[in-house]
Image (cartoon, rainbow, N blue to C red; front, side):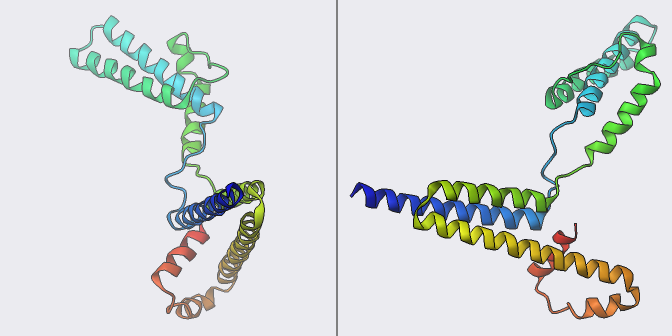
Length: 207
């Protein structure tokens, strides 16, 4: 009885896992990775910390010099707001020099800010995310074992192979259109009968 219950539980867990993976896989391709973020890099952590340090020095300078109450309030608020950036990104392993105003305004600080801005727009490749999810699912199903686990592993491997093939087809089509611009309109016309769902999926794959 216990063996039968365990077998049913294993099959149920495997089915749930497959459904979760497939929904996540489809959602990731259709929605892209705009909602996902890479972990903050060392440069981004340094920039966040330097931003807080810059805001702190600006607030101190505004209070020390004959400035308006409005400017003092703005710099004080900016210093408070910048703490959230440091908390979100985390502290860097190495802190950039920022003891004085001159150090804060050095060329390296401007370069660091530019690097952080460029990195902030980076997003994970949806195909790599999906492939990693499939690999994780295959590993978990293999650990579950049994007939259901073996079938799930086979299904996920086939799904991953098909998704890779589909990606290569889409990339090949894009390469063809790039080198045969005179055929672009005819190529698009041949795909007019695609369903909205298919068009959305293909658009996501192009990214």
